Amino acid sequence: MEDKFVLVKKAYDNAYAKYSNFKVGAVVLLKNGEYFLGSNIENASYGLTNCAERSALFAAYSNGYRKEDILELVVIASTEYPVSPCGACRQVISELMEQEAIVTMTNLKGLVKTVKVKELIPFCFDEGDLNDK
Image (cartoon, rainbow, N blue to C red):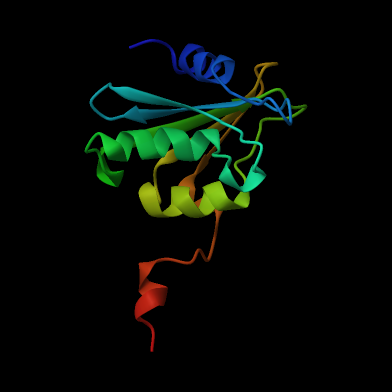
C-alpha cells in the first residue's frame, strides 16, 4: 500500500474548493490494506458541500465496509497546525468508526497529531440517545 501521507495528499489535490479555496483531503485506511480517498467538494449552494472526511467514510461504507474494518482516518489541509475535522465530521466519525480507531490530522508542512476517535468528540450523541425515554 502507498504511504498514507502520499495518499492523503492525492486526495487533497483532488479537492473541488472553487469558492473557499480551502482544500481538504482524507483517506480511510482499512485493516485489510485497502483504502478510500475523500476530498471536500464544494457547491455554489454551500449547504450541499461535502467534507473530505465524510466523502472518504461514505465511500468505504458504500463499498460494503463497516466500522470494524477501519484502521485509521487521515486528514490534511493547508493550515498552520494539523487540521482538525469540523463538528459535523466529528459526529459522523464517532458513529462510523470504532471509538478506539485512530484519526491522524496533518498539514502540508508535515506536522502531525494523532488521536483516538473517542478523543475527538467526548460525550457524543449516538444511537443510545435515540432510545432514551
